[in-house]
Length: 458
Image (tube, rainbow, N blue to C red):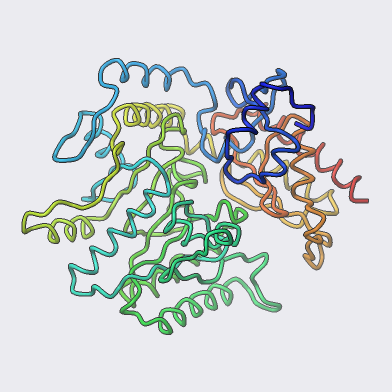
């Protein structure tokens, strides 16, 4: 990037006409964009022909890599048969019914139902709306507020961004909206007090949640939303007993648990869904990303029977469910998702991710033993984070002005590796199709970049 931008080039036209997500506008104008031209397996190629191992699967999502022929064929066939139709007004298609049935079965939401949308943000906001209906039908219409957690990411639309616990998602827009609250993040590494063990830490987190509920009024709280493992907030794995204890508090005050599986779902954490990894039992689940390996924008919400019964009861007088998106249940997205799930099952997804994740983590742990700046390696399955610190003993972070995470990001890029820096946490979420050689190559490029960062800091 940093090369001169030629007039009328892709880079020049992009700078002139395109607004990028999560990008500093001035930096884009100064350095220009990276133009990606093609993908092959776990690699993407830029306009100069340079190959990069994308160890973030794009945005945590390209689980089957960047050039899967079966997904392309499934989309092509469906485009030829029926390129679009909708699911409003009692319309459906064979694939929609088949995928809904499959998702209810895969998620273990016995007796439940699935609703389709096109993004994770839409899925999360759909869960909020359904929570409001649920409480209204049960004679508790004042239960409207939603509790999320610090360092959580739940999407970019207005309500979804309000549920984020990240300042950069709020500062430009005057968010969060009223009624969206936040409680403590379950980060043992950063959140535990001196002398506190994990049992006491979990109890304090549950106590703080209960205090928030009582302060706001239990009859005003509709739902609690959480990712099984915080993704964009720094790959934070909660203590083992966390969700069981939190759900005790939620049940005590009749508060629904909304499970954001957008990153954690479809094998990412070493189980089909993150809820299995952390021992959670949600009332609703939001799915996206890995659902189609992001080969088509599709998301879903899977709900427990009680949620659907509330929706049915609310409309028993003949009204229609007043919610929907033009592309909900899009036939091409459904076809791609069905094929993706079929591939996951054929590749024995859970076992494969556990083996590859353990191999990559072992490499990272070895780096941590050697490196003076690796404070912690954490994660589950093929969703791993490395937290960089100035002092390993005291966990003292680097001065934010140094932008150490961004320095690593640039070094990794030069070494042909795409990673993700979240402050000074380095994130790795490679396509789930990685093999042993891929894992070893990712680790080699991380190690090389880390050593270069150490030398630069010294």
